[in-house]
Image 1 (cartoon, rainbow, N blue to C red):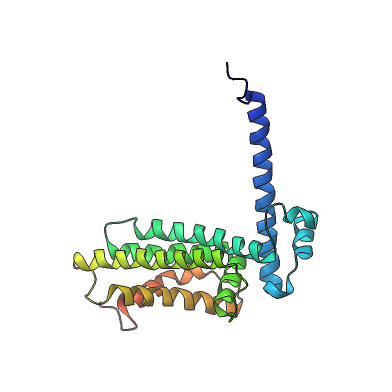
Image 2: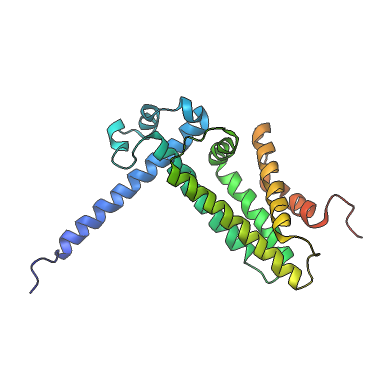
Length: 216
């Protein structure tokens, strides 16, 4: 008999404790997202985040090294969710045109459900000196490259089937991302209560058909 193995009751207690830790970490990340969105990275403080999360400042250090580590985790966790949903949309049909349209719908729906994240995300694109730790920055860049590759692969599938016209898949993927990013940025700048998802088909038509009149 192996007396070193934990008993079932010990394992249950360990599982409960881990769930509690995971829940507290999520609570901190959500509070940090709100504070970073409202105050910006430099004006936000761990004290403000702890107050929003209704915990002691020291509790944050159980999960994160410093403010920069927390900031990077906020960005990465939401980015992973966004990229996962985007990739699922871009591989959801045999037809590339439909996938590209669904991708924009997924992206804009994610924006509407996570506006505070996008305010942080777009600000991160504008700062000259990023506060991110190197490993966070590298992981973010890898996610962006993966995102671009998924779009490029979708376009290649469409071109090989004759659904999309010839042209550089990489440049077309960049143009696709450019439309979605700029429309998202404009929406945040205008700070309206309207939904970005309502403009998804317009954005898809702009990419797929350009600004010319659609054929009757």
